[in-house]
Amino acid sequence: MLSVNGCINAQSRLNTSVKPNVVFIIVDDLGPVDPGCYGGNKHKLPTPNIDRMAAEGMLFTQAYSGCCVCAPARSVLMTGKHMGHTTVRGNLGGISLLAEDVTVAEVLKNGNYKVGGFGKWGIAAIGTPGVPEKHGFDEFFGYYHQIHAHNYWTDYLWHNSRKVELKGPKGSKQRYTHHVIFERAKKFIRDNKHQPFFCYCPWTPPHGSWHIPDDDPTMAELKDKPWPKNAKVYAAMVAMVDRHLGEIFDLLKELEIDDNTVVFFCSDNGGYPAFGNFFGSNGPYRGQKTNLYEGGIRIPLIARWPGRIAAGSESDLLWYFADVMPTLADLTGTTEFMPDDIDGLSTVPTLTGRSDKQEKHEFLYWEYTRVGNWQKYTYEKNGLQQAVRMGKWKLVRLKQNVPFELYDLSKDIGEKNDLAAMYPAIVNKMATIAKQQHQEPVPQTEPPAPNGKRFI
Ligand SMILES: [Ca+2]
Image (cartoon, rainbow, N blue to C red; front, side, top):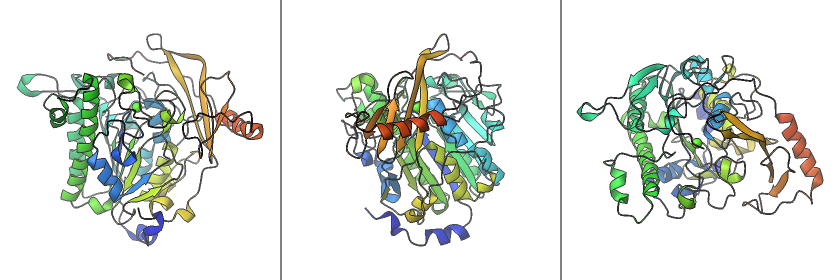
């Protein structure tokens, strides 16, 4: 691997170049070690396009989501505010961004970017002020409420809050939603190749419910595996998003905008140990999606920008979804439109080989309260989880009324050896940060969810 400093003169070129396009692909519930370039899971699912992207770009070894589940993670990503400050804290699906929230899409839109989103919004129900077309998107196509997104065979999706019936082959109404969403994303890139664009792709696969069309080429390769049926479908969904990532790069090359497009690829939270933890998608990390141990918040994250981000480079910078807004604003020259009260930092110095100039977080902060009852729209009582990362230290508790645990992640990546009793001063310092960073969100009433399977 090349050093991160191997990308010479990136900054001087950054200042004089035309505005780069940004494609931000965030897949759903892919575990932190699922991609081959992160070591691979127990069954070493092939991910050739993700691996090639890492070989051509920068792989982050300590990247984190904004939260351990879908909706709040998206809220952090969009607002640049960590979980103690962002608007959407819960995962029931109908809590919405507020009119006054400023998103990364709005920041880039104000800088004359064309902005499209294709996939699962997850942070507003239809008819609320939080819908994407009121937050900087020229167009958004896909699911708005994330309960709706648990159905890959729904007969409608939304386009700027207008219902779009899905017409399938032979006059049937249904089509596999991700295929439709992917086609729209590619069309957006084609249509905007002559102007700076931001294409946000929060793709739903490989999130459950696990479905893929029988005729998708990835299923043909897996159908004879002696695996549980849904495990085969999960593997096929991973292969499908990997193939689609490759198709995005093919398209950028065909349109001759590959060199001027920064592509990010990541997951939205840690893996879910489905099918009896068949794949071991969280590798050595403790915990899973829905909790704040490392397995709930660690993500694969790769960035690629030919000639600007050193090929085959790797960085252990600690960064998370709050950093996406300042990073994209910095890349696109739109920082003047950012709100003053965000929690993120630009990672562009690291991306462009100037890690000596990289501003570092004093701490990273997460919180989350799990859903208590999906039917009654309630959250777990005293269920506020909190976690703080400060250098090598990780402070975490999974309930409000239990003591904090402390781990030294430089020696104990599996969070097995609680050192809280040995280092009370560090616990006190980090617990004070946790207390200070938690602010109460603006109360909202959860609207009724659309039809769809209630999920984690
Ligand atoms: Ca997710």
